Length: 598
Ligand code: SER
Image (cartoon, rainbow, N blue to C red; front, side, top):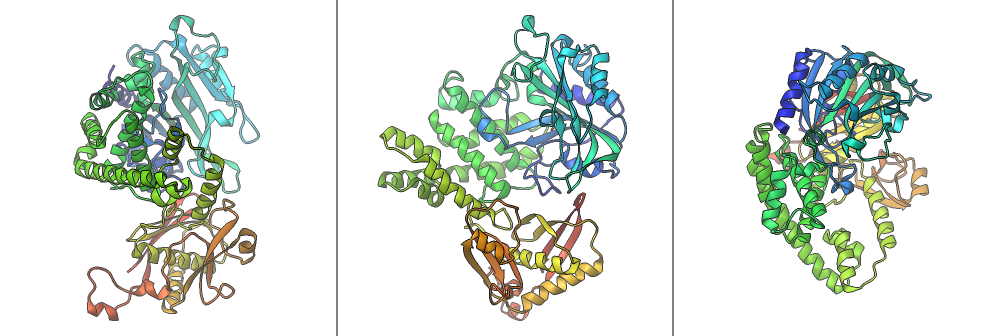
């Protein structure tokens, strides 16, 4: 069975059960400050899980492209991927556990559909705890379908609970399906979730709770079903393959790598080839997404850069050079019918890959020279972008000892400091923030303070994202802001801009910093030393002070100035003003403001 056939069967099956097909959403989440990428089909559907009406009705089915980078270091085994496709069926307040499980069982085992052997099927259900009871409904349903009790594991939250996608929101117990991929003659009588030969292929989540900011699980009035079936794994199972990289979703990529490297996909080459195939596929999809994310030092761009660089590093192990574009071409060809955005954006994909590869080659060259001179590994990493893994490899070749603990300590300190950045997005390098982003970053601090004054309570920052056009600020607040409140906030910010207040930074010990009353954006994740940005004449009398890594404008007056490549003398008399362009809900209890310097 091919990947195309599985996608088609899945959609057809659920259409026959009254579901409407919806297209895959973008890989870059629109309304979720808690994740950089769409990691599951539920992300784009959160508003509908919370009760908003979906234009296509309350039974939906889709194939969603997903990116998970949480265990990027684990990629290299037979069935974990950075990019994967998730088949999902959705009930938005329509059917619940009984039907969801019946549909899953029928699709998996009926001859008309996948026709998998029901004797090689195991499941798990939620065992219950103080937040929610044992899921006896799911348990009984599986039993009634002929799954023996020994094949139904009762497991805790860690295993059988899904969501919320961020800190708060819809979530609930789930039931997971596993297929025996070992010798069919030796299928064990009972299920053991430690045995990797029981491969998880599908997850039905019963969204019946909403997790609140206080950590309570409140029953949802609308009960939903969210299921997720990994296409790559299912395809391998359907073709009795123990390696996803041998399926049609990877074969052409692996073949291309074999050709370019003149090495075979076996022995010690396997891991490198898998990582290259996985990372460059993910890279192609991120670059090919309509949002136009390019490699950079922040946010999604940073993840993208890491994926590309990691692929290149593993490429070196099998003597590949200038290869990323050629691999990516194969990916575009493979997927272009299912995801037309890839061919549409192929120039953007290939140009960025070429540029990034060239840049990284230079980094490696310079880093190598510095290494020869005996430069400290940490400086190599922070100032030259030279990966520590490479330093280690080189040191090993030359019989030099490297103090890995010391490196990790220094790195931790460095990261904690960058995390204090209010945007959280400048992590890993402040250098690529342009003048406009700096101004908007300062505007974000002014906005935060103004919100606190106008809304009259300590609002908690949930996320911030800045590009050269606008700022975006997410904060905990329970209701829509009134027009009047928005105006007050704008006026306050503009007043501070017109006061030409200096923006300054001090670095101090964390305990001292806390005493200054500066705002912490991200809980307790700070190192010993922190930097505080304050706006005003002195730290004592500052109008705003925050733990933050910068960078910022030097003076609030800069925010009003019009400058740049198209500078026009007449602009000297014109001033920009701070303006809120949008105020909306992101999820329960979290509001989002978008604002510009107009
Ligand atoms: N959200 C669940 C998962 O990702 C089911 O779709 O596994």
